[in-house]
Length: 195
Picture 1 (cartoon, rainbow, N blue to C red):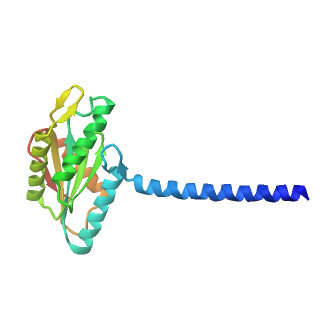
Picture 2 (picture 1 turned 45 degrees about the vertical axis):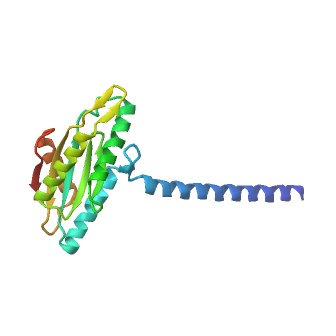
Picture 3 (picture 1 turned 120 degrees about the horizontal axis):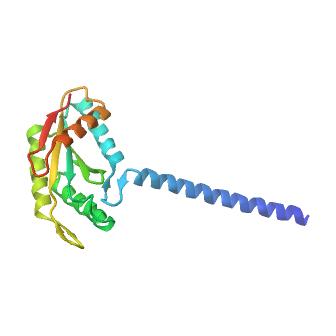
């Protein structure tokens, strides 16, 4: 009889452990869903979050006809800094760009030295204006580092999307990468229309 009681207690303990594991798994999945799209260093969406924003804009274009632009912001001078300065630089640039954009625009960090903004209802002229405004903000507020202030010079490339049906997201990102590669730091924004 003592064995049956011991077995029952062991089964009950295992059930509690299993329930605790299930609760941990549920919390981990939620955390992954929430933070899987966030660049924690910059405090903005990461590449996955950027792609999600582009996909949403493409769907909105197909549904309502509202065009948009995708703006690449390449920030020079961060890649060759130490890890603390790179982290602080990402946070600094993310905050500046977020503050300078409209509430309807979406910003995300694309990689270590670049950010991407999805600009709602912005054509070629609007994307160029936004790029110049962001350039002014980045130039006016340098990054404070352990080695002194670091001027932030950026390059800007944009793809304007306005025709239905919206292009495939990977095609659009490929065009953006090409345009960004032609943009010069401190130069005029390079703006093209999506194929």
